[in-house]
Length: 352
Image (cartoon, rainbow, N blue to C red):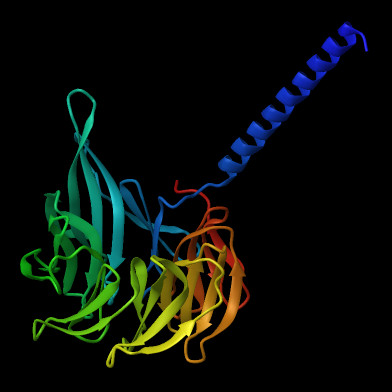
């Protein structure tokens, strides 16, 4: 083959490679643009009313079950030198209040930002108004839990990396009522308030401690527990589900424990990759895992009642009756799913 022909062929190959690269880039951008929502959105269903809440940036949006906007909470109403970003929020069990933890960053004169810590607020829903605000604190965290009456809420507080406590506040005035730590030193990853008792489950390392607020003592422990969204009580509180630890990694299995005897009742197996979100509704336990499935479990039998294939789930939350699941998914965005058939009945497309 002549040198000129080789040169022409090489140019054509380079051109084809360039075209393929541009096509790949175009498809990647198009795919990314099609994925409207991400893990940055926090979702919760009101435990009593048909109100869907979505938190993003400095706002929390309240929708009905058709994603029609009802109201919104503005965490930064006035122009300030602060950047406020919602980090987490939880409804009180009676659905009348919502506790919000936000990250507060101060904008310096140079344009740089400095993190001031978490700001904690309690909002009343009817009418929608701010009831309590704790000033920004660099030592508090966004881990939250409500008592069964909706009058107190709990946060974790860090004196140091190895010395953390649970602080309990009055939801009506923000007064600090008490603080405790089930063990020292403690790195607390999650807390959950028993839905019917004056007890708080506290995840420290790989152990879960049950702290009785009346006796001020640990009344039981559960081993091999992964904190950080892997801990949830049953609606009656007689059981608690946890994502387990195996070989120092998150397990694919989910453990169901008796909260009176603190003994293992059964293990739910089926996920092929580890679970990372749990939600317990009236009619079953839902688990989202990195195998791109949501499993609905019949806890009484340990069997899977439904498997829903979803590409990547960031969060899940049950409706009041336990028939619909609110999901935050990489491709679907924020949607409401009928768990009886896996159909999407409503999707949130636009905040405006």
